Length: 195
Image (cartoon, rainbow, N blue to C red):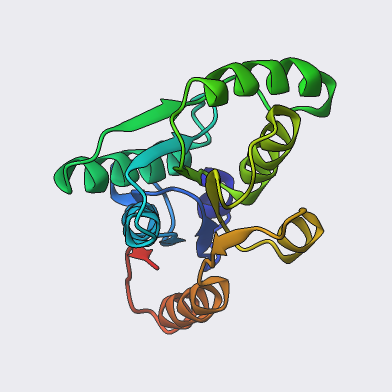
């Protein structure tokens, strides 16, 4: 974004910086409210009457703070409600490492009590959990209730069974980015917004 800022034209960023205030951004930014997504996931799964919970994330990189933010909010909301929560991050998610990824995920999943509610950092990771459940003989949703984030229709609908997912307000983010860009183009300063 620094290249864009140096260009001297009005610009607004949209994306996955969960806490844009903590990142020195050179342009206004519209971010996803990943804390709200984590809390919503905890509320949903706890509301299903479950007592065992887990979060399936991804290894930390400088580009995926959104996953850690969703994880922290989910775990914190459950702990405040009196529930422990297991966390698994595993290894990278490339197709080259699919079998290795599944082995680690299977080993972790088999250690978890059932019925279990798992929130995944995104729909792609939820799809990994669906496959691990299939391989381990765990039934969805009877043994494991799985919740993704992003509501990616292709991933959710092609999964068997179809995934339940938290929808991100992408349309609202687009409108907010357009509003911020309009303000910039009209000489009004603006900062970061979380959607």
